[in-house]
Image 1 (cartoon, rainbow, N blue to C red):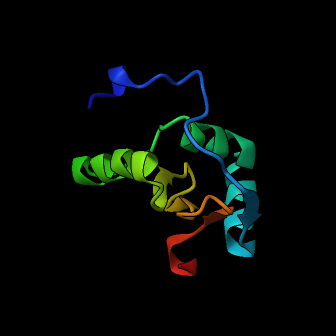
Image 2 (image 1 turned 90 degrees about the horizontal axis):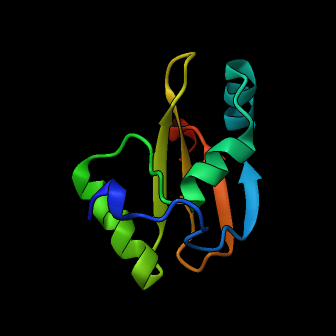
Length: 99
């Protein structure tokens, strides 16, 4: 599946309760990136900087109800992850070190 095959105008899955770890929140505030921006990218299937294998795994996860992971670089360095649980009960924004 190519990115051009994805309809970015509709949410692709439920986020559930949205949580942000303290370190994730501090990193986003330092980079001046609103949480909602990353959540919008994630829920519309923009997985950020992932390998092709991980992108394909996310596409399968959307269809089968498995855990989803996005990874977004920060202009201040490092990256944040957005993870939606398999049961779609929660989505968490966190730093990789928080995992």
